[in-house]
Figure (cartoon, protein in one colour):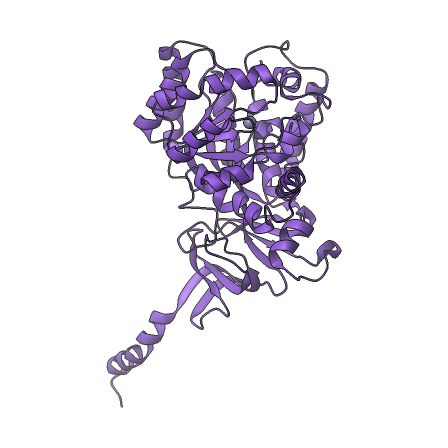
Length: 471
Ligand SMILES: [Zn+2]
């Protein structure tokens, strides 16, 4: 009779080399057309993606998955596109409850109409409005967002918004906005209190960072921008500054004159990006390019508010890093990254009368890895790469009669839309399926938001002109 111990050891010796080749994950997607959106990708191809229990990508590659790969769930994606979740580098999700207002107004008049709905709001509104707005972004295929919260020193409003972001399932940078008015001490204390509030949540995978949501455009004192620079240096934060958005000549002149404040505050550099940047002069663009700062393009909102068309080709030639945002749902009333890409692409082609000046691959890159880059999270999201979060979309390009796929980038950007998005995954977990949110609490959230919207329809809580809620 053979010794059972020796027999087991002999089996183990045979099995060990095989076990080393086995890789087990939570989810395996195979046979789909893989858009990695890695910087050097030139053509999507059939491939696979394996994600682990920690929600990160273990392996991604072209062809068939290696034989040793196993997963708890396997998704057969033949005929489908597998694409990174969109990154919207400029959002105001709480605005999801104030769409369709001030339809004939540019930025100034639109702001006067919308911002009172953010002032003096009752407890719970900021939480539910932000939660609803973030879920709305997810349902449009946006898995990461930079969220301006515009609380303007209303600390409870900011904390509620933060909790709404956390509850939504979206991955986010919380764009904290310093109070527009106040002394240095008041502003710094407000930031420090909010920052301390977020620290216990710092290890949550969905919470990527606190960022600064800058409003140098709206302040009267340089101290605001100098303090932002101090905070950026001390806490290692990124800042996205609203800048040169509206076409109004007086505003353009006033904001151009403030450009030196960013350099004086030590902000101007790779951790600063400019939201909108529709009306810079050449000197400002040269300084932005030389500093390594970026910009965030919001074509849907810029069109809706008649702000103008950002000179994207010129910025690219200068080497300025470019991301894209859908802006708030009150100025780009449907938070749709497909519409955003097409609006941007078509407005640039029309302006330059050149169909080759910007390609579908370019705008897709802006709305994924480019956006992640300018807000400082490209090490974690924006492309399908080993070690990044498994945030991805399964898109059926044949749904809605989008036709045969001649050119994957062309079909995805020019012909597909939200109805083609079958599934949205965040951290390898299903967040949306065919437009339906998987959050078991979604019906209750919608009922709660509807009740609060009914009150909003009766009119804003505070008179127009209240500084809170400025954009
Ligand atoms: Zn904005």
